[in-house]
Length: 295
Image (cartoon, rainbow, N blue to C red):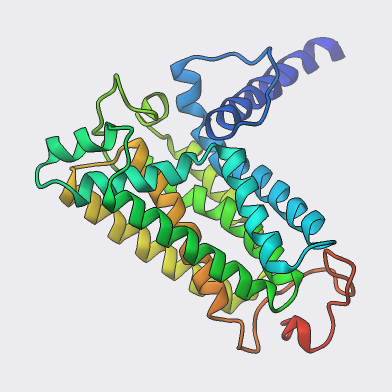
C-alpha cells in the first residue's frame, strides 16, 4: 500500500528535479545527471526554476569569495569571483546584454535590430556596454566588501537569485519576437503559466528575509519600476523580447540590486538576520561594522 502511495510522489519529485536540471544545464556549465530528459516542452516549463539556478550560482560565488579572500586582498578576490561567475555561466547573460546593446543601439528598424542581435560578432555598442557593466559591478562589490563580508556575500546571493526572477518574469507578459530557428532561448520563451511565475518569484524573493524592511521596500520599488520601464522600452524598440533581452534584463537587474544596497551603506538600517553573533567568515556581527541590525 505504501509503495503505491509513494510511487506517484516519487515521480512528481523526479519530474521537478528534471526541470531544475534542465534550467541548470541551460544557464550554466555545471554538470547534470546523464539521466536528465530533454524536450522543448520540458525546457519551457523549466523557467519556474530560473531563480533557483541563481541560488546555486550565488552560493558557489559566495564560497569562491570566501576561499579567495583567505589569502588575497578583497579587490583581487572580487575580480577572481567575477571570473568564476563568467566561467559558471559561460558569460551567457553578459553575451545577451552585449547583443541587445548592439542590436537596439545600432539599427533603426525592428528587422535590422533582430538581425544584428543574432550576429555572433560584438560591435561598439555591445563592447562599451559590457565593459561599463563589468566595471560598475566590480566597483559596487568592492564598496560592499569595504564594510564587511556580510554585506558582500548576502548581496551576491540576493542579486544572483532576484535578478533572474525579474528577467524570467518578462516571459509572462511580453511576446517573443526572435527568429525561432536561431534564437538561443527559443524553447523557453513561448509561455509562462501563473503557477510557474509564482514559483519563480517566491524563490527570487526568498533572500530578502536577511534585509530590513526599508531595504526590501526600496529594492522592490526599484526593480518593479525597472521591469515596467524595460518592458515598455523593448516593446517600443522590437515589439517584444528575445533571449538576449532576458540576459540583458538579468544583468541590469543585478546592477540595480547592488546599487540600491550600496546606497544604504551609510544609513543606520541595513541587514536584518535571524541569527546574530557570527558572520559568514567567523567575525562578530555586533557593533558598528554590522551597521545596525534592525529589530
